[in-house]
Image (cartoon, rainbow, N blue to C red):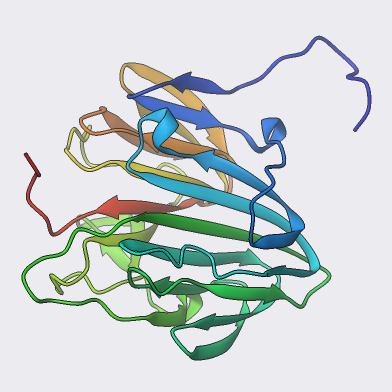
Length: 254
């Protein structure tokens, strides 16, 4: 780091309980017990009003867990490798991830990893699991590049991929990738009970949050709370693509 070349400024917009836009240029390192060898930034947490916690790690070779991430009673977790290569273990299942690798750990299981490339960028996510009857989710490891895009809401220039089963009530969350070709957009302004945590993987877009349109680009993070109006357009020359979380398959708890 060094002295700034101009006045201090930011594109960050934070509205606790409603939404937040957090560019990567404002992220700081957080010391997280159990993770060593990388810059760990907490980009979303209940302190903001979210029902989950999300992290992005700028990692070097050897960055790893010294204690399993999120191996806590009642806490489920998810990992996504944006770029790089790493070894991963979830519930005794071992794999080597390349870019696009992902894993889901049921509540209490946790995630272990070690970066084996020179650099890597990693997303981590955790939240309280909401059980349903006697159903139990299971560990999942895969690579999103092995999953084909589906057309989103009958629009030929917007596509979606699902990380976890969409028809299994044992799962109370999912992760998706949504991709807009330039000019693609949501079919309507959404207003719903689900909250989202979104990390922009590529391109640029215009995003409506509450009543404000904002320019969004690669490596930005967006959190939107329940019932926040939201919609997006893809702009520029590259596909506007992001990974996002979604709570699902559960009624509202009173």
